[in-house]
Each structure stands twice: as structure tokens, then as C-alpha cells.
Length: 418
Image (cartoon, rainbow, N blue to C red; front, side, top):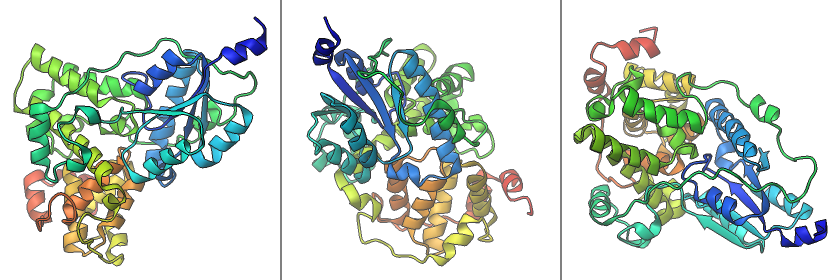
């Protein structure tokens, strides 16, 4: 058969890689492997990723570099572009025709709009759900009927929802239809975007799976998770899985499966349940983002319009509240902050300083290694009283410090002048 006939027979598929930077439990990658006879993989930076600061971008590009090597070792061609999909895809479509584009569904409005734009180009598209524990069809209600209170959501999905088992990892992937120089960023150019990030958070899928295995099985920390998770200094007091979950280097269904295996093989208690409980919170904000669209970023009730002036002192860790300033210093210097810290600094900006919660959420979007748009903006709206919790919650930083840093060791570490 001549080369022209082979081209006609080739099912040329473009896999648009988004926040699904993994080989395991990846429905898009599995479809690409099973259906395409030729094709390529494309990653483009989203608007949110181009707003990211040094720590978040470093972790992202380091993870992309390791994934590119893994995908290409299985035969795929991977094009990485630090540009918008709306710029890159038309250029690519001028070079070759694709029979289909596959991609992962994302919950937040900017990503939803990008997907709608890709669908408008006239190339058949197929999208898959891979970011949440549940699939939409496995929820016991339609998205439009999603409860506005987490407890109601949790009770219904625990009683009636279904979580699918993780999908297998494909061993071989289709190669490109057209020979020639690979466009986009080279591996060296991707690596050049890696500067530094948190020393304890290694990039990539392998590191994420190793962290899961270490926390659960090697260190055996799961049985005490609920009692230690608010610890501020000891790295292993909480699971620290969120960076890999945020970029899709770790599947939430794999985490859930491992929790169940741990409960079957070792022990089941309130702490082992609680890590799964936190995964449900992550899922809840995923579905809230789909339900509310752009309103997630403005508030689901009347938006509190605070001032900008206090924001700079808050970002710089110069509010005069040692517990708050220590957390903001840790974030600025490492790209990381504990969940307890996030609740406190958000509450303080909005309730004590009168700052605009949306500016605080935008700062987290820039700084956090584990930034997840749905969880970040959902939690900020929650603290501001314009989201899922309308109550006027106010934290006293001095009292919070006495509870979670009674000896002042955390403050001493991240607020040295004190």
C-alpha cells in the first residue's frame, strides 16, 4: 500500500491536553490510544496558567517536562505551547487536518469557553470527565439541582452516588501523521521555565503517586489524619496531595481507591474516612463551578466590595498580626500554605481588613502551587459569606494562634523579627 493510501486510512486524532497531566486513569489518553491510528498531543497554557507566579509555573512546567518524556517513550508526539489554544490551534489546523479532537472537560468558565470555541471550529470533538471523583451521570441529581449546602450533597452522594474504578494505563500511543520537525517548545525550553518550587513537592505523576504511597503505606499516617491535618510545621501532618490533584498528575479516583484498600487491609476509623471527606469537598466545588459558571468568581450572593488598600500589606505579611503575617510570608516565599492558614488569612482580609475577597482569591491564583480554580474561588466565596456559607464567620487570629501554634514555633519560623 502506498503512502497516500496509508494517509487516507489514518484516523488522525488530536489530544488537547489540559489539567490531566498523567498516564493513569486518563479517559482522554485511553481513547486516544485505542481509537487513533495516528495523531499528536497538544498542551497550551490557559489564561489562568499565564497568570501564575513563579512557584506555580515552575511546578507545572517541571511536571509537563516529565510527562512529555513519558508520552514520547510510548510513541506519541507532544507539542507544548506557552500560548493560548485560540492562537495555536488555527496554526496547527492549517498544517494538517484532524478527524477528531479529544479533551478533558473542565468546570470553570474560562476553560468552558475555550472548549466551546474549539468545538466551533468544525472538527468533531469528544470530551471526557476525568477531573472529579464522580461522573455527572453517576451523581444522584442533575447539576441544576445540585444542593447549595455541602452536607446535603455529601449525604446524597454517599448514599446514592457511584465512583468508578481507575482506568488502565496505555502502553503504546499513536505517532504523528506527518513526519518532520516537531513544533512547540523543546524539552530544554520547557525545562528552562522551571526555576524553583517547594523542596518537598517534586513535580510529575511519578512523584504524586510516590507521595500517595508514602503517606498511606510507608509512613502510615492515614489513621491520624483528622487529628494532625491542621499541623503547621510538620510536613507529614497532612497528605499534601493537592498539588498533583490540581494539575491532574494524580487521579482523585486512584486516591479514593487507595483509601478503600487501606481500610480493608489495615484499619478503618474516622481519620481514614476524613481524607475521602476532603475529596468530596473538592468534588463539591467542581460541580458548584459548573452550576454557577461566571458567578463563582463574583459571588453567589450580593458581592462584598471591599477596599484594595489593605491588600498590599496583607500580601507582604505586614498586617501586624503575627499569625496572619507568618502564613502570608510562607506563601510568598514557598508557594504553599496549610488549609488552616488559608482559612485564617482569607477571613482576616475580608472580615478584619475590609478587603475585597476577589483580590485575595486572585493572589492565591498567582501564588499557590496547588491552585485549583473551583476549590480556590469556592472557598474564598465561602469565607466571604457570598458562597455556600452566608454566616458571618469571624476568626480571632490571636485565639487561632493559641489553638494551632501554642508555642509560637510557626510564627518564629515564618515571622523571624518576632
